[in-house]
Image (cartoon, rainbow, N blue to C red):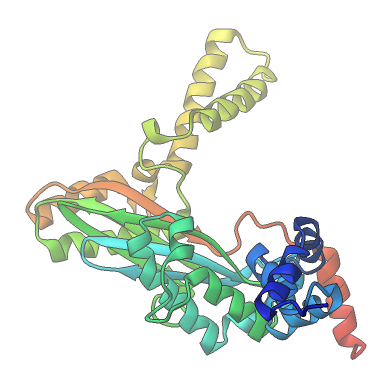
Length: 322
């Protein structure tokens, strides 16, 4: 019989790689669909050989780590005079967060964050530094080489057309890298240096007090209603008449606003005054009124559920030399 040409043979082989096989390989390794397709094509549809091929390239190794909790890492910050961006890149251990290679990566990612304008998908797709890979691909490679799960968790962006953006980084590990990052946008036609100086103080204040909104109107109304319900239940226990209870609730809500609304909080640099009063005074010094138009505060790992069981097991394994 006549021998099939080599190209036809390859086509025939490729045709035998089904969607079900790609799905199975993805479930085994967690690698991306295109990577799984390539692995099966390279290995004539041999599943075990395809797994080894992915592992050799560091792609399956990265996927196996993907279930592990990454709650350490770094907050990265980048800024110009009128724009600033924050990113959170997580790792599993603080040890990796102190690694200069990891730090350099977070720094490079944060430099792309201004272009991404707060869009995490866009940031993942940005070209990493001057290389050919995207930010997401670079992160995946880093997982393979360092051997820890890492995630690009979130990003935020602020711009001030008629004013400045100020920032503060707490627990700084290196310039622009730390554990709590804050950016604040301020509008003013006053002296830019004076506005920026006040903005830096406000950013430090936000790092310390973690406000939920700039003013009362911007507060999440669900949060206010929940608080009102709790305060009403507490006040009812006093057994006082409804009109007195109402006054008690309003008084306690005012106290709540002083705790969670930025402009109503006592200013940490001058606790006798509120942030609103300090802003008024700073406006006079700058030669024009100042208005805080937005802020973001990223605290490393907030809201990530750590699996304590795993941690205990890891410590026990380390202690026994396993």
